[in-house]
Amino acid sequence: MKQLTVLMLFFGLVFAASCKQKSESTKATEEVSQELPVKVKGEEVTYATDSTNLKGYIAFDENASEKRPGVLIVHEWWGHNDYVRERADMLAELGYTAIAVDMYGDGKLADHPDDAGKFAMSVMTNLPEATARFNAALAVLKSHESVDADKIAAIGYCFGGSVALTMANSGADLDAVAAFHSGVQLPVMPSSDLKAKVLVCNGADDPFISPESIEAFKSAMDSIGASYQYISYPGVKHSFTSKEADANGEKFGLPLAYDADADAKSWASLQALFEESF
Image (cartoon, rainbow, N blue to C red):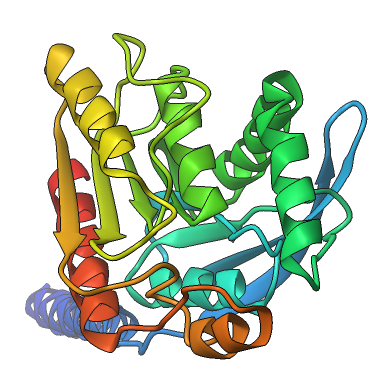
């Protein structure tokens, strides 16, 4: 009987030690997992409205296991190009899942400002289709396995900023919206339908954005008690976040210029907006 008791005590100690080792091993594995470096994965995605096929790009950190906020990025008037994909990758590095949307259809790109203007106008003068294209991208983003569908934002550049603001003003269920070098004379102005916190970052020397339109925008935002910030960078021109701006400006005789300081400051303001919103 004494021998049996000793054996039971021995096996009990062995089992306890084994459980402790497994627990410590599991904990170590979890710690290693948490320390994995960011690994951005980019995927092309196709989606559609009833009338238009669309080609987007989604970027996320494939080493992160938890769900995270999703961000829609709307391109400049040139169309869905490498620049908007680069911004999606940058957001993925910060811990978001981002989809670079296609507002023109079939990934269509403009090579000349005349074409870009026509493409942009065709979207902004057909709000039902524009909304359908935006919402189609939103559905793709929300359904992605990495996304917390209750935490969604939208940002845009130039034409894309106007699209993002218009969608927010139309009542899109967004937590935050940011627009960079974006017009604020919009087809749908701010109203009680606006749910998102708003950030607008523009150059003070941007001739495409009139002082009158800025005042009208601010007045509309103030009238509804909106949560917003309008930042104007002194001496900064249109397209200040794009490193292609100077070349495009020279090529087409347009007042465009990249500004590294304004680019960095506006990106920091975007991160602050997201931290506050999420």
